Image (cartoon, rainbow, N blue to C red; front, top):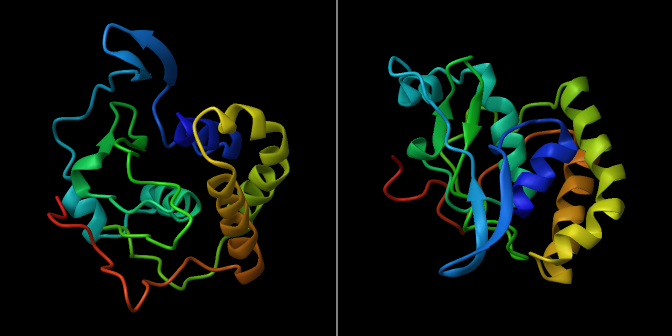
Length: 170
């Protein structure tokens, strides 16, 4: 749920529409089913560093996604790429692990920096909604990651003491 809130606040539309509901198994999130293109080869998109994946990679850096696999990327019928399965995100400790390292160390575009600035300004207003799903230190760490990305102006590099890619990667 928190991933969806940040996806919307940034304008990236990475996470499909998500709502929080109480159901027969208890409270939890429900996500809109995404119809995908049958002819889309996500692995080839990753290998080619398809520009549509940049915003997903930047989003993952913000939410500290420790489990971005190829199978968690969906190419919708309209060509938009979205990500699902954000269950291993928002850790206070740096744990970014992703198949989207194609832009590591590259400079953020003006538009990407603008989206991060938009998100930075939105975070104080989102605090109440995020507190329903994240601990205070997770919210603070997320805010710190946004600020760090803006300060550095570049996509992150893999950490030397943490596996860069989840296993299995697909």
